[in-house]
Image (cartoon, rainbow, N blue to C red):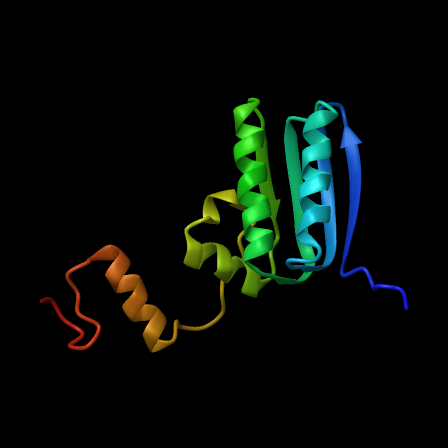
Length: 137
């Protein structure tokens, strides 16, 4: 039985710049395809890599790690990696992990943050805020 490909990668080059469009899911199984695609850009002399995330339905820590590694490798050769138009759940993953610096075109998350996220945000701003009491220690 054939394995269904969970991620499709398309690439359009223009001089030393490329646009990669991802469609599908990025997980432990598909992250190697993503890594290889981004690595190939650098091998081909591409120094500006833009990744369109509009059609990504899911991304786990394997995908996040692939993006972070690619960002480091790209910066090491004087280039840049930028991620564009992530769906809300993917933007949330980047925000929660502190890797939002990779993003351009970050969508605004609708509605107020749930209580636990407000508390988490408060801890990042002020480490002396107690989640149990809701106030300073």
